[in-house]
Length: 415
Image (cartoon, rainbow, N blue to C red; front, side):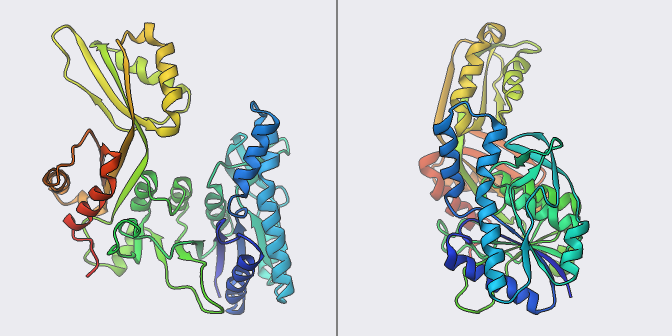
C-alpha cells in the first residue's frame, strides 16, 4: 500500500465526461489499496474567464477580492469530482484550502505556502476516504482566501504530498511525460523515463511547460518524487508509464551511463532591451537593474559591451515579453539617474536552451551548440549559462529550426 497525491490539470477536468475519466483513474488507485489525495485545477479556460470578470468589474481590482473570485474555479471541480467518486461507490469528500487549512504568506494573487495542517486529512485518507483538494488556493493569516499565482495547482499538489509524506506525487496532464524537446517540433523526440530535479527545474525555467517552476523547486527541497503522466486514456485502460522527477542518487540507480544532454527547451516569451551609451563607471549598471528588481521584473541574459573611448558602454539584457513595456517605462523614468542615450527593444526573439547534468563533467557542450547553429546560419544575439544549462537568444523566426538542429547535434533523435 502506498500514499499517493494525484493532481489533474485544467484539460483533464474540462467537463463532466473528463471528470468521469479522472474519477476512474482515482478509483483504480483506491482499488489497489492505496491511500489517495487528489488536487484539481479549474476547468480549462475557467480561470481566464474569472480573471476577465475581475478586470471588467474594476481594472484596478483589489488583489484580495480577485483571489475570492478566481479561487472559485477549483472549488467547483473539487466538488464535482467528489460527487462523481461517490456515485461510483468510492468514499470521497472535498477539502477547501481554508478547511485543512493550507496557510499562506506574502501577497494575494501570488501567495506562498507556509504550512499545511494535515491531521484531519491524514486521518480521512487512512480510513479509505479520498480527499479532493482544490489547487491554487490557501488561506492568509487573517483568514482570507489566497491564490498562488497561475499554474499554482502543481505547487499545491507537491506541498500536499510533502505534508502527508506521500510516496509520490502524480501530475496528470495532456502529455504522457517529459520529452527531450517539444514533440510538435521534433517528431523524433524521445520520452524520458527519469529526469533529475535540477534538470527539470532548469527546463521549466527556460520554457518547458510541463511543470510549474515553483513546484519543481519545492519537490527538490522536500524530496518529493514526482511522476508526470497523461490522464487521456481510453475506457478503463491504465495510463502509460510517465516520467519520474527524482534525485540524482535515484537516477544513478537506474541509469549508470547518462545522456550528456537531457533536453532542448525554447521560449518565445522573451524580449531584448539595449540601453545605449551608459556611463562606463561603477554603479551605472546597478542603476539600470535596481528599478526593474524593485518592480519584480526578472532579468535573464545580460551583456555589457566593452567600454568605448569616450567612457560609455551599451548594456543588453532580456526580460519576459509581458514586462517589456513596463521595463521601458521604468528605465525612461530613471533616465536622468542612469544617464543613457536611448533604449532599443525587440520582442521578436526566442531563447533556446540545452540542459543536462552531464555537462558538469564534460567539456565542449557550448561549442557544439554554437557550431551547430552557425552551420545553419543562425545568429546568436546573447548567451547565458549555468552549471547544467546553456541558453542563447536568436530571432523568433528561427526557433523551430534551431530546436531541430540542436536535437540532432546532441544525438537526442529517437532511432
